[in-house]
Image (cartoon, rainbow, N blue to C red):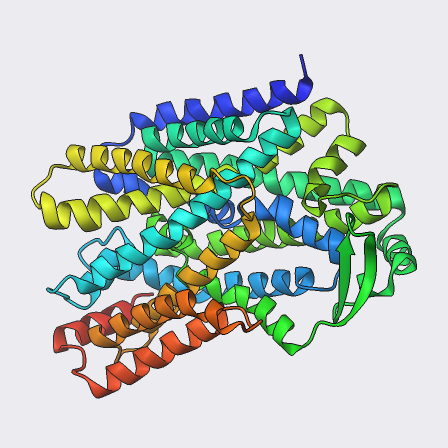
Length: 499
């Protein structure tokens, strides 16, 4: 039997077993959505990384580095993401963990916004939940497409069959164990991803003779490959192989760096901050996440992509296959099987979190709010599980077209969440004068800008105008309208004073 198939099967069995075990630990909606706020610093740190880095970490980012070296967006997006993640952990994590518990133990972002501003109209909650569902459908679909292409390329399975197999596996353990299953499997998946990229990049560098030799060989192929400010053209089918394409320009660099802004509004990452068992563990989790779960995977992915340039005699038709092809070329089939499982881990770890956050929006923010206000915890858990099935089915329908672009879908959804929820999260946590109307305006303006900006034809990443306009809307509507009540201001001061 194929060693790669055996290692894949073993990995998937472990994931399902974890789902079955955590099924017995899930009794309330808080358990299902936040794991009962019981996560330790290690699980929180790695779970946040795994939820963040979907298939693009092992497919998209190495592919970009293979096609352009240090140029284009590969280097700058890594810099932007590293800075954004560190700021998010440094300033947002602790305050959000404290505030969500103070505001009537809020377990979703829409619920937090409503409780934070005593919004009896429920508009904050409903509109937030609608944007979450809209963007996550496309984000989840992108992960399912990536998983299908992995199975298709590794085992030569027909695309639609591969899509269904991947969806069933992910839904199975998310359906069973909820947040605990997702978080504990994410811990394994993030560790596997980090190890795969670290091992592959270090091994490749040693084999080639170190960084100096790598850059010498890249420079001999094309000077633009080692120039962070230069663009490179790559199209194997068109006969264009690493040809200089001029300077990146300010718009390109700003657009790439702006990916870091997205961290402040990603529900599937922010929910990890809400779930850690104590705000006092955030500092330790931050150190673990930034070192082991962020820096190593990001820059390991860049190195892997560039190693592929100097390793293969025949240029790849699809640059995003570089990690998959490199591990199969370099390693024993058994080792390659485990490393390729890391690709599946990256995809699964993000899709499961997206399914869970989307299901919580349906069960907590719609079902309990408008249909069954007195629903029991057991009933809400099952509503959450059924919601997972429903959302996964719609995502599969979106992903059914095998020509779908994974990177385009991820980029769009990341900008959507970053612009729609990033400024509202930051202002609600750190600006005392933020009002309910200001927050609502920021959410609507940010989300609508993401939908409309592509119509302008601008090369500027929609995250930038969306984030800026959302922030302006929050400030303007907070200042010209009725300010927060005395009760809200006192709560803010109390939370700000927690050490």
